[in-house]
Structures are given as structure tokens and as C-alpha cells.
Length: 184
Image (cartoon, rainbow, N blue to C red; front, side, top):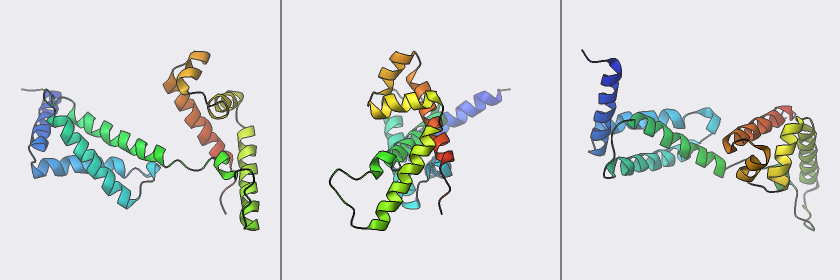
């Protein structure tokens, strides 16, 4: 009698082989897994972008499994990793405006006075939220945003990993966002 883990591994390898061979049912199963990841609301990916990303992900998966020497072990994990990373890439490419983006270049006047007032209000709200952050967040933001130091350099200075700093920055930004007044 085989163990459930062995059967699961055999199924994943079979799925990978069938996907590589162009089997329609395997492609639909992989596509369904990719779509579940793309549908995560936290990414905020619109329908058109989801379709484009889905095709990109399926192509990258097919290219990966077509490489000589690719072993089918962990194929389902590969599907999830590739899909998640493409979503993160998409999200990072479309980051929301920061307070620095809201400040018009020196000497450029916005002809719409209402928009100027709204921009100033947004900047003040962001400043107030950032000032309420813990000192560790303020220091990380100063080093990364104001001084433009990469996470690797900051990690060497503070003796932490880059990943830990990225997570900390994410939490700091999320905290600042929660301190902003609700949009009207």
C-alpha cells in the first residue's frame, strides 16, 4: 500500500508530464491553480491584467518544464511560486503614489487650485501618519527612502537580513496607511 504523500507526488509528476505534453485537462488544472492565486484581492489585479498575467505564467511554466533535466518533483509548488512572483512583480510595478510623488516639481504650478489644496492635504495627512510611526520605522524609511540606500546596505548596517527589513518596511507602510484618514 502506497503512502498518500507518494500518491500526491506521483500525481504532481503526472500533471507536469501531461502539462508539458499539451494535455488539455492538465492545462485546465494548472490554469485553475494559477487563477486562484491571481484572484487574491490583496493584489488588486484587474480582469484584463489577470488574463495577461495568466498567459505569462502558463508560458513560463511550460518553458520551465520543457528545460532538459527538469524533474517533475515539486511541480505544484513551482506553479504557486511562479504565479505568486508574477503577481508581486505586477504589484510592485504599479505601486501607489508616495508622498514624494504628490509634490509637484519646483517651479511647476498646478493651474487647478482645488487640486493644489487636495495635494497639500494629502501630504499633511501622510506626514502626520508617518510621524506617528515607531522610531524603528522612521529610521528604516529615512535610510531607504531619504538616503536611497538599498536593503542590502541597510542590512549590513543594522545586522539584519534583507528579507526581514523588507517585511519591516511593509509593516511600517501598512501601519502608516492605517493611520491615514478614511477617504471621503
